[in-house]
Image 1 (spheres, one colour):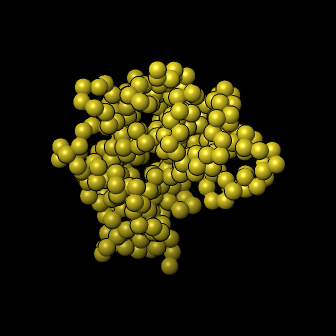
Image 2 (cartoon, one colour; image 1 turned 180 degrees about the vertical axis):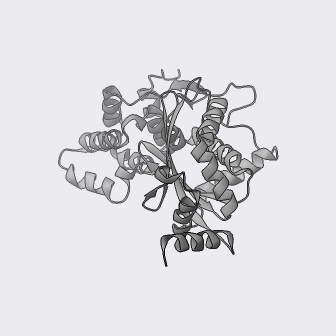
Image 3 (tube, one colour; image 1 turned 60 degrees about the vertical axis):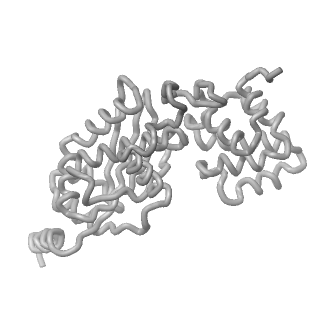
Length: 298
């Protein structure tokens, strides 16, 4: 069978019968909004998901024919794993992506929902080991690569919850995120809310590291597990390994090494808001107040 015959066979298989395929859209945004950092933030997660759904709906031409399976932390990229269940919908997406419409729609929805005046977005589309950006002038070949990359997972539970939240919002059952009491202004994308006050979500500094290490005591492991939910460097046996490795140096050094590892692994995404939320989750609000320089109530 020559190459032309093989291409015809692929084209026929794409159009006939049930069709599925998988692709991953990688996104990198700057400077005003970091989509990956915002997705890791509990307040920003839903807004990022909504931006992605609106963008995909624009590019596919509706809500049918695809689904988001999972969002991946591919630091500094945000990976959007897509499953296509309709060849025509996948072709429309590829056409939109190749023309730059996907990037344009993503920028517009991000600016509208998240507030930046300027946004630069870089994208890459992959199916298995194939980078589709290099063959967008051959849609049938792109479809073949996507069709050959079959999804290896069901939709992640977190995505299912976000889909349900989006449907509920569309029906008017829940308020627009982030969740605030009626009448309060929305929290800017570069800030976070703690005890009904807005704080700048800056990168963690040496002073934060010292205050945390001095004040957390035996609860450092608990905070580490909270941070580890969204930090691969603190998953699995990492925290127990830190405890064993620095046992002789004491609690201060164990806590110091924990937060240092978080900062080193997360880079610019190691933000004050993530540490404060981990402290809240660990019921260490007094330490959070100390790090934020909140004066104790009289």
